[in-house]
Image (cartoon, rainbow over all chains, first blue to last red; front, top):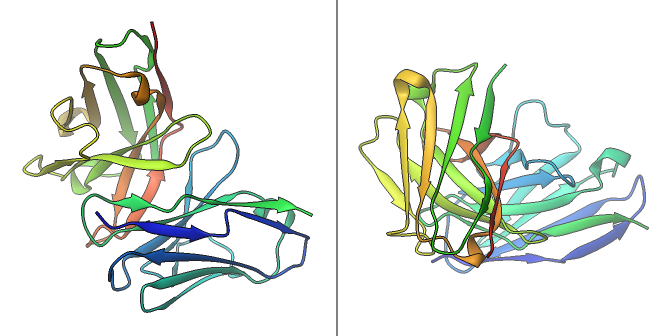
Amino acid sequence: DIQMTQSPSFVSASVGDRVTITCRASQGINNWLAWYQQKPGKAPKLLIYAASSLQSGVPSRFSGSRSGTDFTLTISSLQPEDFATYYCQQANGFPYTFGGGTKVEMK
Amino acid sequence: QEQLVESGGGLVKPGGSLRLSCAASGFTFSGYSMSWIRQAPGKGLEWISYINGRSTFTKQADSVKSRFTISRDNSKSSLYLQMNSLRAEDTAVYYCVRVWGDSDEGFDIWGQGTMVTVSS
């Protein structure tokens, strides 16, 4: 199985900050990587697919990139509604696996 | 609008069975592969099951293989998860999700989730 290692587990940040979350795949997955946002008590929401493609309706302050087996989710200017937990997910093959999550908290 | 609504969760004893249902609306259900994803309390996300649009291909995670069965009825726009031999570690919120993209790029529509608690 492909392991997805997400870091950091927690981020303490303020409104307006630039936030970067990293996900490392245990083997090559090309661009088959998605990012999700989950707020407490709610279902996750797809933000980015294919490593860097923004899902329809997602604000442009969210972006994704890839370098080899390392993937990055960047929030360019953190907004109040962005405090949430973020997960990466590899879509390269079964079993689809998720990273452990990164909780973005208010500083 | 595009929507998924799960039902069938509840409290069940270890070794028991439960059948989850998911009603889809607002899109052509038969045109999409579907999956079940679960989240144990306070934990991360775990993909557990997948079925393609015509039910010709299914896949399960090792953690549920031979115990859980995914199925669908396109005439009813419904997805199901039959769960047998339930264990305490199956306790989780179970999400019905739509698989998005020609190459399964992600999960774009999620239900609200249904809680399954396995306890004596």
